[in-house]
Image (cartoon, rainbow, N blue to C red; front, side, top):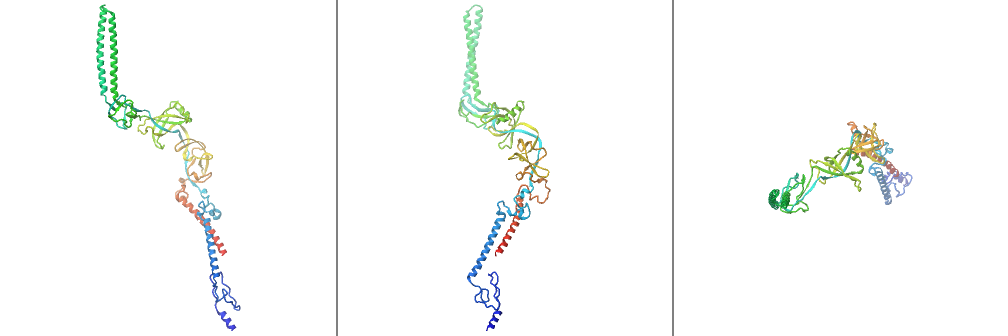
Length: 494
């Protein structure tokens, strides 16, 4: 019986190892009796609930640990995990490619810039100021006598000349007064003529000793009395003639009429508040502007020699030239509250571009500097050291050069010292430069050169995407190494 039992046990195949066990249990020798219920023995599979749960829990823990390690690596080394947008591990020390993908990669690359050459020429010394267009004459037309306004002969906004008829007041009352004065004058002239004849006769009789001398003297006095009366009558006639002239309201100056203040049919008087209309002279016209008292000396040096300084009026945006004129005069005192002095410039205003009370920008040409070193205004920068420029060296590197700036004329700036004629300065792209930085000039690059588009100086979308793509590639390469080590650590823990 024992031999048959051993033969049956040895001839029975071994049960396969459970997939949940890390490794299969070694086969027991044939001479060792197997206890019922032992795991791994033939005919007795491990079906205990505690063992199955322990295997599953260990597998879940290993998966969760692997996911946490992978998430940490992605957060630590992925490009969007770094504040600067590039992985710190993608530097040259980790990737083996120095300078590529690191934060100083763009600083080591030649920066594309635009340059200009310092030239020599004339630089005008210009004083700019805000001015007000002021007419030389602005007249409110008032009636000089009382009466009914019969007609208005002007249109609002019309250009009129001096002496043009503007309105008519009813002249009939003044015409009647004139006729009456003329009648009185004729009567008194007749009386004067009679008195003169009588005086002549009395003088003849006196010479013949026919009358007393007292009568002759009385007649002479009467003649002088009539002469005075005739003069008074003539004055009255002239007065009524003048009133008839005043009944015709004419333009006192040439200019443009404004809006009508009184309509025909109204009774007007010399005390009319707003008058009938306002006439403003437009040609010529003046501009009053102010300048600092510090500029007064150089202006006086030019005006005292009889020179006519040129003044140009620009619009409010200071871009469009409206009219050119000359400086007429200066005020006789300085305003102590502002430290400025007023100046008046005269403009012919042939195109009527200057309008009364309009604000304009004035440019007073005081002097012209000969043989000045001139650069674009954008080349001059301000820093802690003061004003400076980036000078381009022959080896396409830049150096910081402090300069002393002279007069500025819009887009041109004169350099008093620190720069020579012919030197090249950076006018665009200087925000990414420093002392000794390498540059590339787009105009000097050969056409079709590889990498030229990727190194465009404007930091365009294509160039920026190319740089970020390179950084992303290095980042992915570096981050790929880290998860690899993490995976080996996970396997080792398993």
